[in-house]
Amino acid sequence: MNEKHKLVVVVGSVREGRFGPVVAAWVAERAREHGGFDVEVVDLADVEIPLSLPALSPRFAGDAYPRPAGMASLTSRLTDADAVILVTPEYNHSYPASLKAAIDWHFTQWTAKPVAFVSYGGAAGGRHAILHLENVLTELHAVTIRESLAFPNYFTGWEDGRPLDPEVPGYAKALLDQLAWWAAALRAARDAVPYPA
Ligand SMILES: Cc1cc2nc3c(=O)[nH]c(=O)nc-3n(C[C@H](O)[C@H](O)[C@H](O)COP(=O)(O)O)c2cc1C
Image (cartoon, rainbow, N blue to C red; front, side, top):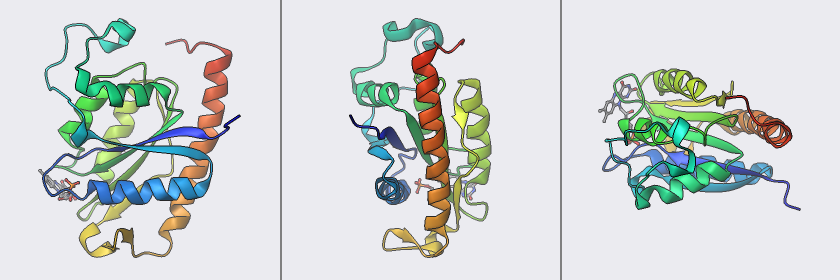
């Protein structure tokens, strides 16, 4: 039996020339090294995410929610996930519209799942983006992870696809340890009793 947690790492930015895939690849590698996860990376640039939503709410429509065919890979991975890491830049003191749209097209896929955050940006390192995401994910009945990674001024702090600060892998391990703990706890809880959403 495979006891690893299914982890989805989401690349939240879709901007031309974006840095997001570099951060996500590094995070996914740390998660594979950690040993507690089966890791998949979902790049929102590869997903069809219309800004216009159906009339129904995904909260109540369940599997009948009419999503575009090009969103299926994201939806099925979120559905199957035991844990999610959102990799996000900071745009105007928040996170990108691409990530908000991807979140809003789903509801039950987030419920009673642990979600961790890795951000990057200018001076604040994406901290504002994480604060906003914590707020939004709580509305979706997700459990947000206390430890997060924020990379300020990533343009000087990264080289050859990795952060220069030697302390960072230790911070990543702390995040992944907490994520694994919550993934196991919430998986067992979801299996035992339906979440009262
Ligand atoms: C529209 C826009 C707004 C931005 N606003 C901020 C900001 O408020 N704070 C910050 O630290 N960096 C800000 N930045 C810088 C981004 O964090 C940086 O360009 C980062 O590389 C963007 O991620 P991406 O390359 O994956 O798209 C902004 C960038 C863009 C394109």
